Image (cartoon, rainbow over all chains, first blue to last red; front, side):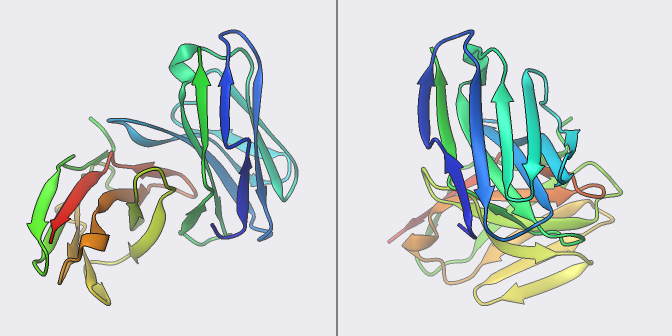
Length: 112
Length: 110
């Protein structure tokens, strides 16, 4: 998985609780991404980062926030989880100016 | 209209045949195009990238790009049962945003 880890790998939480997912890389890549994957929708970009403290929204950012205080870590927070946020979440990394992305192993989140 | 469209399949081919996977995209300023393979329960794995019109070959895989028709395809020659997976088409549309199709499931029958 190209030096990318995600934690936790599985989580079950209740509606209304805050949840934070962590992505950690050992590749020193500049770009990091959070996606969600749902049946029939493929991968959809939530947020991405182009450097420490530099982040931007993707196509499905509502209800999510991110932070990147160190090059190696990119956090995704669901401030108040809803059942519609039940999904598999993938983190990806990419190098500056390069196009390829490499994905972490994923986190399966269930909101009950 | 979705940015990237793929037929969800499943596409079934016999072992040894050529599998042809197709993808269309809507944004004319799209710069780069990618094919990822995803096994069930696993993360996507990059298998091909293509940036200019024409064909690009890598082993049993050939990616084809036609920007005028906004069409990209992936051919898998001598298909093997281990090729059975979902294939995701991805498009980079600006500095660093990517859009993915929903994937085509390929079944290669022994």
